Length: 165
Ligand code: ZN
Image (cartoon, rainbow, N blue to C red; front, side, top):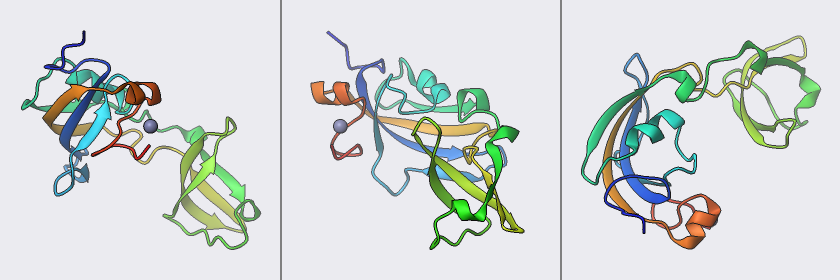
């Protein structure tokens, strides 16, 4: 039997969190929203945050600085590509700073950011927007419960703070 008093793999954990970068800029926060529910050990969080939460109990608060290699990875120059404007749909109007979803060679969705348009070519950055950043999380643990069988199978949380199905 899994004890649900402290965080371990297979439990559903509900947290309030704030994510700030090294310069103090807050880029994500659950404040003013419902807390986030996730399935621990299923890779729903970045690895550095997930490992820092192991063994914590309801009511605990922690601050953790997650290095890029344990977060969204280092920035890669290879992830910056120059593609012809024609590769974008006719009706798309690419402009610098725009985010869009594309498909990688394995068929998985990836996010791209348009860096520049020049001479019919578009420079696209496929790095995660937070790649290369140290992630400063401020976390409060709101709730810990056992996962349902369905949640365990799906690898994510259902219901409040989680997925629809
Ligand atoms: Zn599901």
